[in-house]
Length: 305
Image (tube, rainbow, N blue to C red; front, top):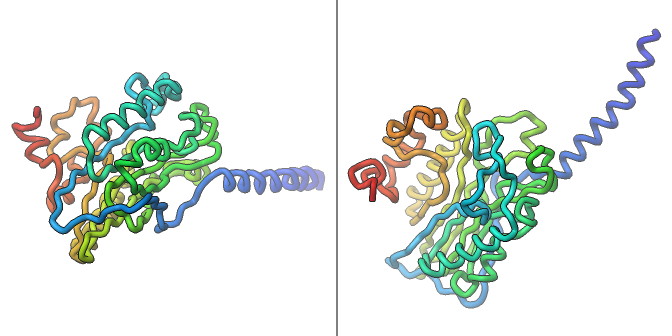
């Protein structure tokens, strides 16, 4: 009987602590639904697309305006890169350059990845709002979808808030947008609460006469070796595209897919091949739909151009 009392005392202490830990993790993290409405902002009288109109689309992973002078801790396979965040000066400089490029190029639709929102590593900026403040005359409409959000991440190289989202800018009306949750990396119950929750940001742009253009923005996972996460993310995306095709919808998909075009694996140095599948997960998409660049441009004699 002498052992029972210490065990009861231990349980009496441990159970409330466990409940407190669960409540704390729950309060710090974010659990999006499989399908949600995504925020859309349009300012003023925004024109609609015209039937048959040519459209210039840009996709750009802006890496939270960090610039090119860093090797971040997550950039190296061992998670031991030297840098944890960009300087405030580099954040401002890169924002200026992104604004300059967009004004120079003036794409009609811009699909942006890795925009920070209230992240400690970028001074808690809302980077989409910063772009809208500088580019509102050119892009009156925008849609957004978070894919990483936590008030605090207890990783030794983070130890603070995170927030990352997709952003779609448009010179033309966006009537609505949706966030579709992609399959996630396998993880234990605790760390899974803090991990990225990748998504498709699906924006609907009306075309005068009753049709609409569906613009899909995404950022697939990376470092998914030993799992089928990439295949599942591609499959879900392909399922959506086939639904749109079957409904006679016009669509465009862009983003950072973190995958090799078919035929590129053999061109990699041996020490880089472990990050990718020999048969690209994109091959079904490449077979069904036109791609930019085309497979000929990506793998053929035109590759150097």
